[in-house]
View 1: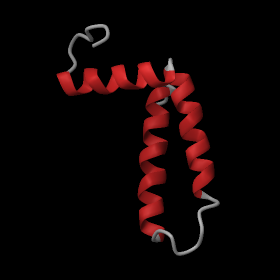
View 2 (view 1 turned 180 degrees about the horizontal axis):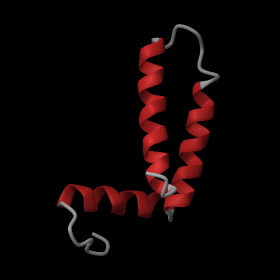
View 3 (view 1 turned 30 degrees about the horizontal axis):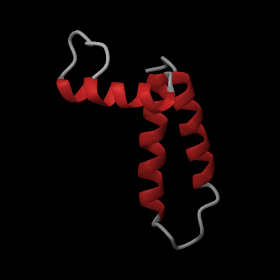
View 4 (view 1 turned 90 degrees about the vertical axis):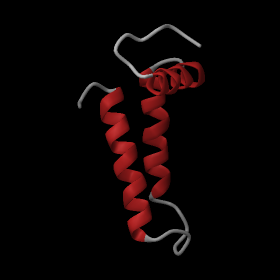
Length: 71
């Protein structure tokens, strides 16, 4: 496991470590999430419901805001 993050639960620390290991920095993960949001615009019709796509886009937007320090 990576650096001990004071005040965080073990689950939060594991998640943060996973992000840091996979993407190097919050900015890099935010860039990947931006790409994911863009990809949602090009998903084939009927593959997912409109509501499912909106839920994913909302979650990505919230995570991205935290990573960029906007939330």
